[in-house]
Each structure stands twice: as structure tokens, then as C-alpha cells.
Length: 360
Image 1 (cartoon, rainbow, N blue to C red):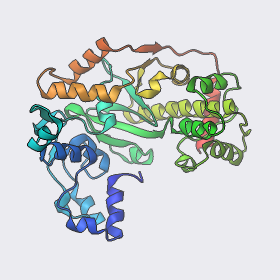
Image 2: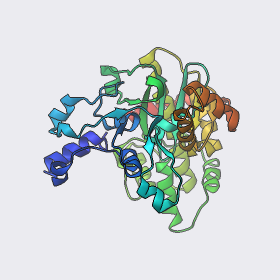
Image 3: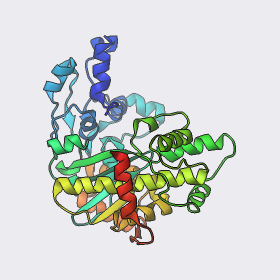
């Protein structure tokens, strides 16, 4: 994807960026914070794995990519696993903050990696949806899934806990409706519940969009971008706020269904339940629509998944919990998780066929 670190640094090489010439190491934002707290410079595996600069499923840099992009090899530092105690806070940090000496721990530095740690899942054949500005939909795999098929489908393999791989797809998530609300609020401020209520009183599936179309990346005026897409694809153009919101909600859950079908085609195994974590788990209407669209039970919660995973990885580093399985058991016992069973009130299969045509 265009924002992956590999392409950012490649662009810097092409533009002869002077910072590359004087740098003696590469730190991702979580690594940089750890360095400022401890003076210790390491690369944490999960955040490094999102750069597209590692060997799939391994805590090793792929030097062939460094060579191809012209990136100085000395930027590649030592990679450490999440839940590693780095060291104590620097004396100057203690003095400035008034803190006693405490250990600084490298958690899963990528927010989705920490969030997936806190998925309260048991057994196998489950998928997760980290729902926020972006939707990250995928599975936890024991090995990276690398093939021509996964390349064509644009899936990513990112590092997880205990040697697992987060096999997932980035989907344009609640950004679509957030941007609509930002535009609508310039005239009259609306609450989220009001937007959801308006979407419930319009005809479903009247118009659909491809949430990942490039026109929605940063259009400036999201409601108009939705309308323009519908006009361009010869569909009824949504006019009201409720129609635009429903178009977005329907399209998102149909994209979830499409992505789950892709995962099943790759693994040859059915997905039997979906765990929704993150801020999007608050949206009860979207949770029910998702269950209805994909036809399997949806379990929503916890919402503060990243923070929970972060805290429990600190506990693991300090020996308070022993394993990822134990962490998930603790989360399941500590936070409310709401189950949504699929219903058959709407014709989702016909809507899905229409959606697939729009994607093509």
C-alpha cells in the first residue's frame, strides 16, 4: 500500500533526502518513544512487519528489498519480539517526571497487533475485525500465507504474538462516515445515534459503493464523493443524509462478506464466527448488519482493544501472565462481549451479487 514504509523511504531515496545520508538507524514511532525513555534502540517486530521490509513471518529484514529500493543497509537494526523488557527509564526521565525507577516494555507496537492480542476468542476458525477509522479484517495464522492468489487479492502478512501471523486486509472503514459527519456538522452538528437512526429509515441496498475505491481516500467532501461514485456506476444517487449513511453501512458490511469469502478460498476452511473489536464495536446497527450479511455469529467487544492488549503484554513481560491463550481468557472474563446472531430479514445474497458487479 502507498503508505508502507518501504515506499516512503524509496521516495526519500529518489528525492535525495539528506536525512538518509546522516541517519545511522531506522526507528518506527513506538521504537522512537522507547528510545527516548530508555536510550535503548531496538526495532519491535509487529510494527516493523507492517513496513513491507521484512521476510514474511520472520523477524528478519529482507535485504533484497533494501537493495532494490536503494535504502542504506545500516538502517536495519536489531528486531525484538513484543512483550520484551527493554530496560529502566533514563535518570533524566526520572528526574523530570518525579517517577521511581520502572521498567520500559516493548509491547506490540502496531496498534492492531496489540488489539488482536485482546480478541477474546476460543478455539479455531474465527476471524477478527478491528473496526475504527480503518477496518482490519483477517485471521490469525500459524504461518504467513504467500502466493500469487494472496498477492492478487492484496492481503498482507503482519507479525503477531507467539510466532503467529496476522493475515489481513485493510478496508476503508468508519473513515467514510466520519468524513461525512465532518461535512454535515459544518451546517448542523449531528450525533452518531442520529445518523444511524436516519439510515434505518431508508431503503437498503438502493445504492452501493466500493469502500476501497481511490476516490474515497481523501476527497475533501465525502458525501459528494459517494454521490459521484453512484452516478458514475449508473445507480440511484443518494440525496439525504440517511441514504448516504445507509449506502456506506451496506457497502462496508458487504465488503466484509467479500473479504471473508476470499479468506475462506485461500485457507480452504470456513470462518465460523467474527470478533469485532475497537471503537466500531459500539455501533450496534453495524454489528447486526454485519452478522446478517456474513451469515455467522458476530461477537462485539472489547472496544478499547489496543489499550487492553498493550497492558496485558506488559503483564506477560513481567511474568504475571504466561501465554496469549491466558490473556484472551482474562479479556473474556473481564469485559462485556455482545453476541449478534444473523437474521434473514433482508435479501443479502441479491445485494452481494450487485456489490460484486460494482467491484468489477
